[in-house]
Image (cartoon, rainbow, N blue to C red; front, top):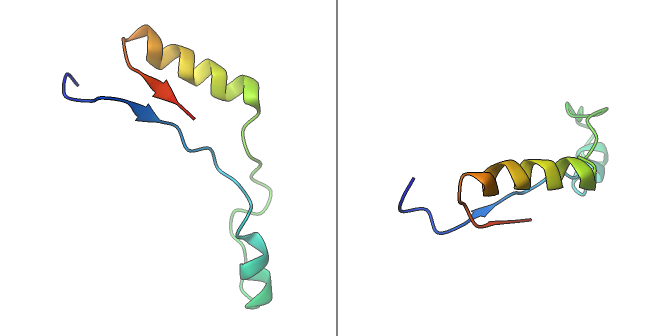
Length: 56
């Protein structure tokens, strides 16, 4: 991955959940929670160990 300049981690969020409910649709990710900051930091650290510039 020598041509990769940076990796941007995009954590899951529930910001669009209300749209599914408003349309009367089933929100299939109900019960899935956004990752904790500690989890994101751990993933970031792992990728940085391989020399990548990581942000989130």
